[in-house]
Image (cartoon, rainbow, N blue to C red; front, side, top):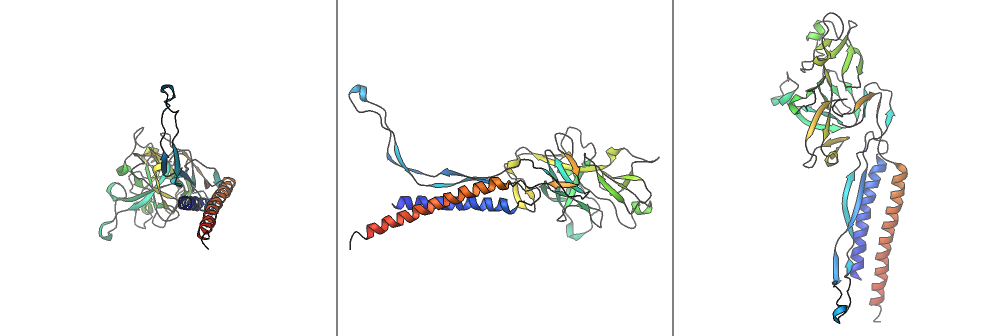
Length: 329
């Protein structure tokens, strides 16, 4: 009877873990870009009470026997993340970006030695990188494009490297020089207004002089004119970059809707939005949560009943043990 007791306990633990996963899914029903988890079970161990054997009846012996075993319960086999794309949630904010297709935005920080001010915002200056489907962006007071937690948003030159993937060194922190003594101020281009993000991730704005500008692809922060006699080609400007992985399911969730690669994600590739099978950008909204309330409640009912059934086994075994104790009165 003790075997049934421990088997039931394993079922209680597994169903409790599954309920934890379901609870997290439901708690994040309104979390933009949230990807649901799924807990799956597998059996654990079997004690062989008798091994199987082939038939020997034609030689005057006994017939074949099947093995008979007793199982010792269940355990959580995996907790998977469902990276299926979800719908568009209209927010009305022009700088909110939704990825219509594959890819993740790239955000992170810059490294500064001894707290000194940086004069380059690409290459070796790039620090920790995170990946996210939530494009809640805006420019800060220093001219950097940041997300809702202050992480810098990274881009690549418009056109990128053609069909080739940019490496980490090719990423550029998206910014414009907002300083009072910078080139933009000297040219009378600040302040800027009417900032817009194209489906290809290219960022443009209207300067104080009424001319449309793009952001310099070299990370200098200069606003480059896209109109007039001094206009430049858009390939000299920055666009929002996206990343994809050989195995997106291998990404590790670290909170704040961020992901980090693990040893099982494979190679990471960086491209301009809308190129090389990367999704295009739609502004004015964010990605909805992947939580399906009806499915989660159905799973919750099944999990609750599974937990209840296993607890009933514990109660029944306890009653049987009580009967054994009461045999001697």
